Image 1 (cartoon, rainbow, N blue to C red):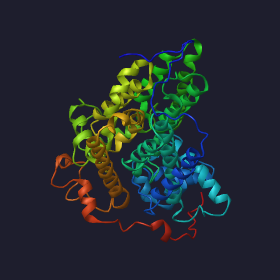
Image 2 (tube, helix red, strand yellow; image 1 turned 30 degrees about the vertical axis):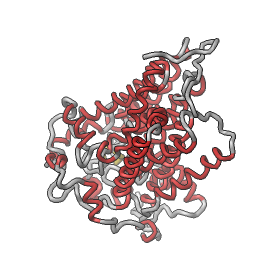
Image 3 (cartoon, helix red, strand yellow; image 1 turned 90 degrees about the horizontal axis):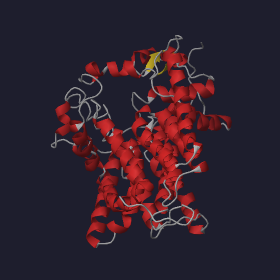
Length: 470
């Protein structure tokens, strides 16, 4: 790969056409205001939380932190003893029930919950309170991630094209579904796009406060989902390689400190550096009919790309636009961010492909691929000029975007009422269904129609129901 031309003094010269670096124009400022507001409206247009077993303990932990000033779930389990039988509600070493999943999303969600409760807009004892907390926080984080995606793309392409990239990211992928509950992916979307805004300016080596803030956002993403370790490791390697002197190690120290805190908490609560993950992994043979945690990645890679019910290229073919960014990535070489983003996305992809449960259990579409989609944004933005040069490729890109939005919308407005994951039998134990082109999940959503749970958050009883005291 060739490297970028350099200015005197060592800084690379920006040669990106149509790039916009300033934030001073009124039009640009208007986009930064209007885009998140419209994103919030669309993310909440279905009027419901699209949750699952994995998100339940997180939203209850968020409420407990605000209401009871604790992260334990004892009061929740006492009120609903059946929760004790669910894997996500784990008995910790200290005897308290706690979430088996990372607590960072719950801590973040406690902020909006506290504000709403403080101003009298949310009764924390109301039955709908945990769902409202989850939906509001997730949609806020994803709306901010969409703004970050726009800001990232704007550095490499025109304003209109950058808006399209942001829309494709937020509503042409399952990021739309990530904005429906506290499953960890919403925090990753926010943190990874925030990190990349700091680190991926074309022609500018990430250093100083940009590198440190970017590293802090990477640390937040890793604390929310430890599975991000491969991508984070690649990006940290980039910061070390491109840095100079002892300061190049500051980002590594920031991420390392966050990892140490999470590890210490996991050991204190569950007696293992990975927390309760080993116990959850041990359930694979019973729940998912698999043996072990990892295997060769070939079958998983094919599934993550082209499975009719889990394939990224089936659900979101708009991501193929990032292939047009390979040319700019080659021209920039390893001195620019594009090659490193591609390397990080590839590492993360093969990590998930080697996971025996690559289809992510009961979910809609390629849930695990959500974690690598932010890394494709700079490549997509860099490839826009080549993609739009010919009328044929422009039309193909717009058709792919329309398809991707339609499939993602089906998840937001119909899933899981279509019952694809369990009808006619459980996909976790009947893996051949993942390859059944006669009954793809998105088609089932289209034919089933809107979920009857839509707008539930506007209809649920808002009166408090007090759980038993401790």
